Image (tube, rainbow, N blue to C red; front, top):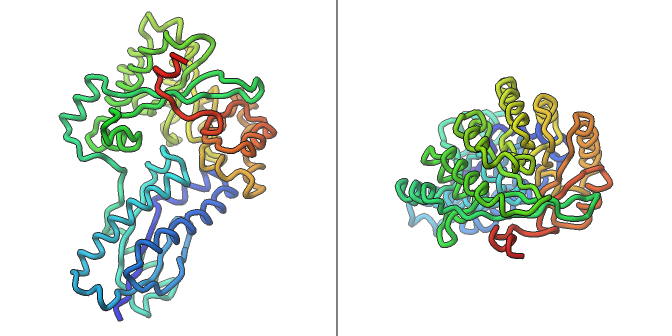
Length: 387
């Protein structure tokens, strides 16, 4: 009987504890194990499953299986290619559920089928075998549309981007105080999904061009959003350092609106780059805009970034918010993070709030702002302005 293992491995899993803290990682491990197990029931229904889902370390899982005799009519390589292609789509959706759409889309992983023998199944030998074998396989990458490059450029150049707003609520005042800008592609296009829109831009090497187009279109509507509401927009750290970004937001007609603008830095910053980014951040603050760190965890690396950059707001990521109430360490981590950020002169926003219980825990932990489906789903900017 030919035996195989289906291996699912997240790239750079060691970063997770640094970013999210040990309490969250414990629960994430449980959730990803359960998610991978659910996927296998549909993925391997035509095969014989020989083992439970096993994790040799955080970020890596495998299951052993064999081929049923009646499935041999198809080429094995063809079978496994179909299996991993379908599996990558299911795992991507699972990661988006667990980490939120933005982070879940960016988490890179590998899903491969490897032949095994009984001798290899020893834990130490298997660990070494998997590590060596995975080195020869490509990672899943990020999702993108099969739209042509010229079509994509045309959408960006002609401002075919749709702008949506999601309300941000003050827990202290119990009212909407601002909106996050969310960008989508044309309504009838696959690019209407944000992860596909930005994944396609990355695929074509046009990420910064897309970001500029999204920010430019949002700024066009800014004067129509009444005071005292503020708006927040995503910006990557690379684009922040470009003259084109500074020139865009420092236009004279925007000067009076800048105190109602917040830019969210959308990636975890490599600490070696922090001195360069710190200078950029200071220049932007001098213009009067506010800054936030997006997808903030409760771990060491993000606290270091906050201490260096001194953002006005840090946004606790959905990975943490969705697991409130499931591990006592998570609540302790949130309170500790709020205390540290407050000491640095900033405030904390919890995003992805879907239940009242989550909002109450955040309020009791000293979190200032919240957003999520519990408070309102994203709406077209035109609908918000006409409300």
